[in-house]
Image (tube, rainbow, N blue to C red; front, side, top):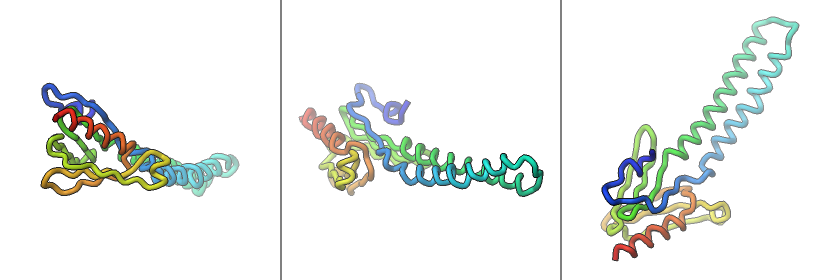
Length: 166
């Protein structure tokens, strides 16, 4: 059960949910693949194909290759956790944005207090379907969130829910 679903008040329903775009994982995937494919697999392959020689170098190569494989998998998992630790939702009463897993930051703003939602998309972001949103509340400071999946849909849902309030 997600953070948003656990923290709904009586009579409140989730209208729209999104999260960070998969693009936030690109750096983690590249590092993970470089650790997995290049040195990790090559070291393990070389160490395991040296059947005739039983030396300390072969054993060290096995350990090093295994360590690089584990580091590559951890790098990819960190990206997945980062992406899944952010939740953004529009309910029939408020906008809820939660970031972080161990340390958490939440913004829960009543729809009546939302002054505007700004969407910034680069050309590349428009092609792939991600952008930045800035939630601005009445009398509050702007809260920017980068690389959000489908930011225009998020803004549209907020605007529709605000219209239903009036």
